[in-house]
Length: 162
Ligand SMILES: CC(C)(COP(=O)(O)OP(=O)(O)OC[C@H]1O[C@@H](n2cnc3c(N)ncnc32)[C@H](O)[C@@H]1OP(=O)(O)O)[C@@H](O)C(=O)NCCC(=O)NCCS
View 1 (cartoon, rainbow, N blue to C red):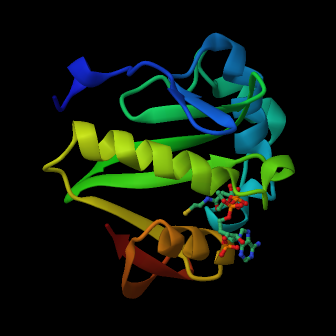
View 2: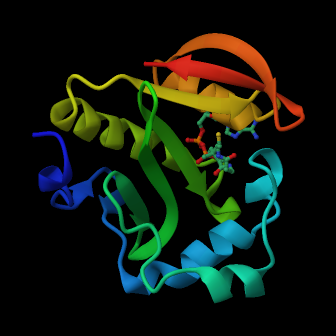
């Protein structure tokens, strides 16, 4: 089941959200996501809207393991399962207007169910700045185990594994 053949899955519905592969109509939301200084606070910053708009592909995020998270027909964030040395790494970025309402948790629970069913033998990790309280809390709530802390990019980072 693992690999490109398993992608994209049929859209996944949760109580309030839909998780699906990226489409051309999501481009503006991707540009907003990657040019938002708030979103960039703990991930190395953001680029100007003009720069992101100039360099973004026609359909950003169209690759295996990237889910667009949709609320009422509009993209509010994305979840990714990118390949790293030891397996795959969970990532998530949501637009600030959607924060604090349990959307990231709700979407990640559904995405993790998909991952467990389609990548049963692949280790899943995540990494976040310790100062990123929301992200640290989210990983703990999702059942990840906190691992070693280390310095990178001038900040204290934390490694998590499922
Ligand atoms: C991290 C992020 C996805 C969380 O999204 P969210 O939709 O606000 O998260 P949820 O509402 O599902 O909350 C999950 C948990 O985190 C807690 N939380 C959310 N924001 C918080 C904050 N600012 N401070 C402390 N806890 C916070 C919630 O209370 C909840 O825990 P609880 O149920 O015990 O109360 C969002 O803040 C984001 O996109 N940040 C920018 C991108 C980023 O840093 N991504 C992580 C890169 S490693």
